[in-house]
Length: 333
Picture 1 (cartoon, rainbow, N blue to C red):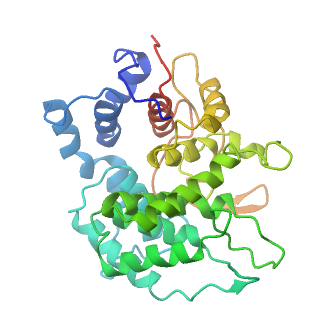
Picture 2: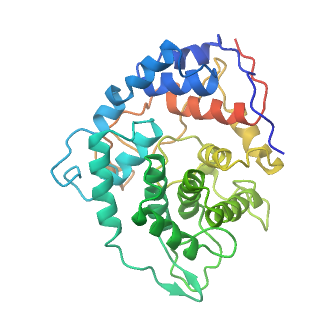
Picture 3: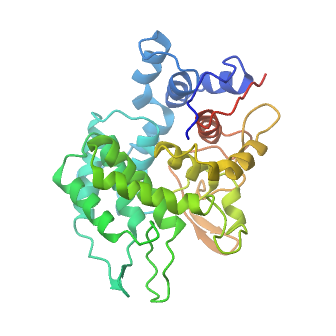
């Protein structure tokens, strides 16, 4: 059973106050409303919310839009395409009425409509479902869940869902186990859609997908009990299409399953990574300040500095959200 969230955090803790006084209004807003549980009519909350679209990260993410709604590259271009920018600005709480955002959404929906149907091999759809899952989540957060194009995305994701609850793009006919990478963003999108529409079929799909992750305790093999990938135990932000336990815990929390006892080990690991001052820092990165080769591999540039040195605001915010939502008492100085 989910333990109900309470005011178990010391609002005067150094970590909370650090987030509360962030230069980014998105961080301030979510800290005040979700961690400190301040009412939205509080002047400090209203001020932070009103400034979100002017925040440094949102401003960078929405800069350079062209006439077609995109940003001079393909919608899915890593990490500068409209697809990825929209995921980030939605996470930062941008207003659904932002004109740049609405225009970018239209460009992404137009692109999604042109994508070919995935192959069906040995009775299983081999789909890059995370792409559609992200678009579904973004549109649902922006008040477009009732748009027929968005409903069609939901319908095909439910059709593509595998018997074990997830999704996979692997065209190997012997692949019968869902992919953590393809499934997490898809779960997020379907959950956002089901919350916006109260659609029972979508809610059932969310339940099955949540169970897929919980069955693995979010990071362990069902057959051996071993850690599937040590990188998943590291903390990153943003995740893009990648996976780690913090992002999984966050999505499971949104799906209402954080209280499941199978989240305990992942929560323990997350809590163990907390610094002495109550904050968290990244232990891995999927973004870089410029496009170049790192260790012989091509990496992709970001338009936002998410923080590569010292404690990280987004990771600390999400970690505190999850630990608070789990009912863990977190009195820190």
